[in-house]
Length: 185
Image (cartoon, rainbow, N blue to C red; front, top):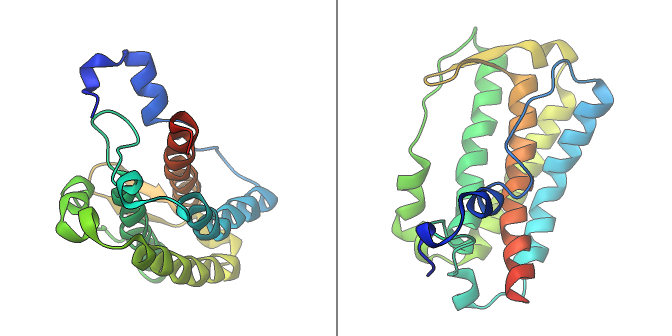
């Protein structure tokens, strides 16, 4: 593995954020909201396609120096998106609930995230996103203005959170697809 210090800061930033850092748009339209939900709906199939022919050693290749392996990225997505789904449901059913954060780095180092078959997480992500996007498409537009309290970020509206998770899926998908391109897989 290439040590992070052997790569320029600019290149490391491009490898870490291949689609750029997250930036929420203020006051998104209903058509933009639908596009974001469509992004979430498409992610499981896009991710399955991106890893379908990768070997075990390829899955265990880090997408950047000092970064997670493809396998860890695949297992991270349902971990993160399950938390996201629950946060949406809490915000819609409670008055500005304070959500619990989690240590995603520690989760990615657990044995199942490092060694389990990616098919497990691909199936979980598919089922989760079908349920989540069904929920998102049935929400009243006013509900997207409701918020939860994040322990580090403070109030987060569901509109911003939808944008974050749509970006998050594209962000990690790009980790896999850009690695494939760089490695000629």
